[in-house]
Length: 305
Image 1: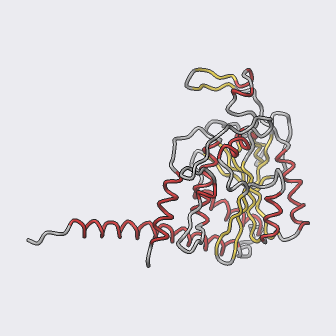
Image 2 (image 1 turned 30 degrees about the vertical axis):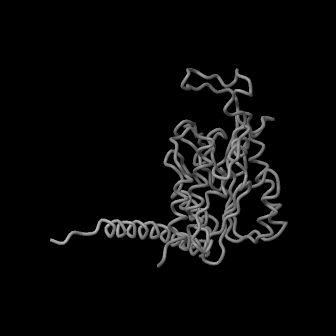
Image 3 (image 1 turned 30 degrees about the horizontal axis):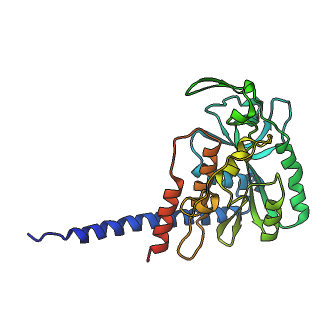
């Protein structure tokens, strides 16, 4: 009986694995194209406005990547314990596991700022200073909300009363949600202006031809900077000191998934980047995002059809 060469068998297994991984990448690219096609459609039903339909499309995209501990709701308001209320938020992504107090008035939902991880504003076309200015009032209504320190939680060493410890020992002093702008169309100039403005959006997701395109603020900043923005937004606390190394870069630029031609797979990139940011404000199981990004990049760039 002829024996199979172990090296030949190993090569075939590697080919199967490489093909499967690249099929995953192609599947996400097809998802991108489907999302873009839907965003460019007119209202498919007289029961939905075009804006509401587009919000549904963006919502379905985030549902593919957000952990199940978070809920995603349309058309909600965010409140704080000082009685401030935001303008209507197109999409809010919030933690209903540890902060279950979602207040309702008929069909209107009011979500405490402490529960909100991400806010998403959905727009059609942003291509002028006037339209950028229209976003300012909405952002002001989000930025004015403040988190309370009057919280008591159990940690590994016992009970922690956050209201009675010094700021220097607090894991959080002033949280704020990650702010995302989803626009059907936006030019590079307008996107840069938005990201250059302080207290504006952290990420912009838009369409370009038949693919998605993403702009990210602080994309090359170490995650300690993000930690400070998301957990100590209202305080003077400085980011923790950290060492940088060529072999250990911790930023969102390093979590991009690209093919051999440098084309970004936006849905896969956003999945890794957004979940990494959520881990910075969460108490999660550790997950090696960079290891998976490296794997996809390695396979995509070496794959031959």
